[in-house]
Image (cartoon, rainbow, N blue to C red; front, side):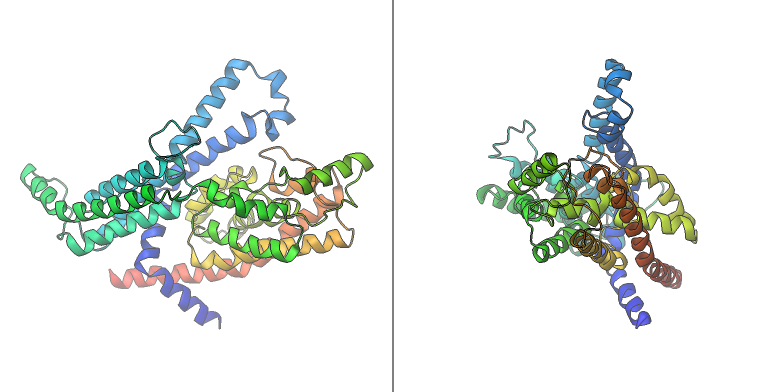
Length: 435
């Protein structure tokens, strides 16, 4: 059974679309890691409602000039990395697709940039949110990575079918570059024409592609529901979207949702000095963020711990080490991209199943009065394992439960790690035979 599963996953990994997507994510790893560290600084240090800012009392101890400079630099770098991540993803996705078929990868990459920028422009027309940029940020952000990868892949395929073969050489003469440009004219024109059709369709139909507003209803249903069955179903949808590269719903989830049920829980806890008997014990906002995702600790940090303990792959070990600090403080994109977890068929089931198991166990513990519901707001950048501790106003049983839950997540991931190693070995062997 395990061998059949390994062969199936190996076959999936060999598909051109998965090969292109994974190579694109790997090449973008440095940008994602840099963005993750600046995101950590912005969310946990240079923000008045952040964890480190309040723990170290930076409001009193940090000079204003340093704070403003840090906030400016960190916010700017997050926008330059994660805010334009779709641009980089579309470029490299088109490049790797074209290169796979020995076509002009540079021209394909630049064409993909034109297509996604026009789509971002069309998506922004008619926007009433007051966005001063001519381009829609929602399409270009890291949260909309899937769209960028698909645009790049389709453009690369157009170059595959309509472009002429291209051989990389160390130095190109002007005449050869001119011929190369003429050869790229047809596939580039067809790609841009297709992009024009997509962009005009977006504008005429007023489609908001990958807009965070599109997922507000989904997030609200997860946070406001007190129905455990509904929460589990919606959680599966949210985790699946995150796995394919649509991160808006997961990033928007928190345990400090402002809704009637959450306010009723908080008011009850403040009035009675305890959260044990709040009226909405199984509220989605009190379950998903503290236990299902743990700010990234449920899957991301657990996988990092396994990699650092096993130490079988030096490259994976280096990726885990450099992403350890950001993931601890809930900045996960560097690891999600660099590993990569996104669109990795080996990690599909654990990425979805582990959060569901966590929610079910946490619900059972709440029903049995083992742990208290998390009803108190938590500071941004609070380490994942500590979220339930602060969310329950310092209940030590909640902290112990979160630690045990995290250990269980590691145990559940261990066989997946072994399977992943077998598949990686099989891929290397096949690539060596092809060479």
